[in-house]
Length: 153
Image (cartoon, rainbow, N blue to C red; front, side, top):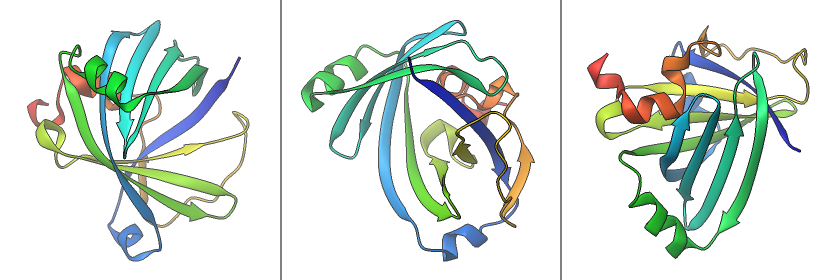
């Protein structure tokens, strides 16, 4: 069983854009967005993925992710009532990679940074461009944003 341990932050500046990073466009939707279990389908670049996540316990939860054919991912996305559109920017700082999600469409204007950690109590250096932590605020979960877009808050 895989465990995802993730902390999520808003950004205080765009300084990160001047640092070396890679980017990929992502489309994702939810076949189930229940808090106890989410089932997500994603197209990341040209690759498709199906992900099942359990309920959050603090900043951790079980996660199972499987590659699927691109055509299957497209067909599953068509079953989703809402599809998120975002660009993920990957930025290495020290031993960790920050995933900075810049949302488009109805969630335009929202930019969130996430870091996956090896343990709940793992220490990391906070970059200067990092703002308020929102790890425990369910409004910033992608499953919530798919049903309650940022521009309607």
